[in-house]
Image (cartoon, rainbow over the protein chains, first blue to last red):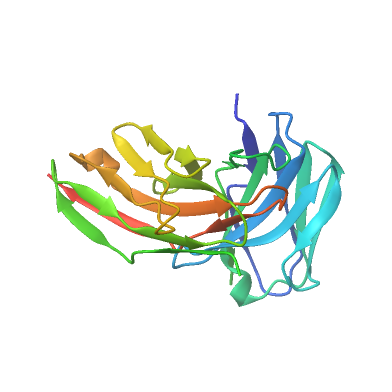
Length: 114
Length: 112
């Protein structure tokens, strides 16, 4: 059973399009995240949700809109895609921040904007 | 602010060599510390963790000790294998902050 699953794994699209990435976790966690990994492997947090509520929005452009319909799901919708959005996007989850709790990551979605 | 700094790579070693990847952190509170590993085309997997000063995390022959006095959490392995080739990330989290801070990653290449 995959703990954190995201779809699709690969996404190639043209500039200006709108696309969504879906994420689901079956670990019973109440905190979920979106991270962006650039071509140099640097990981930057985009959003953090706790019990379906947005907790962290790290100055991400308004074109990115996360949605959490329930604690097990956190989707990411991106409007008007730009070349600079090309990256690998990782979904992750964890229990509410208790000491030592780790994050579990999905396999990533490689987004290529052409 | 809170941050993690780790040595730049790539690090290239021969099989059975000793590995050290340095990691230092800055944190306003008392963080938990982690090492994650990312194999090509995959997500991050937890390698080991430590939650308080002087704790030693270990897994698969890798070890790291939480050193509060030097704010460090260096990753070590006595004898690397080709299968250890991956990108290694040092990370911290702070209680109740709903956020993990990652270092920039260190790519390890192990040659036969």
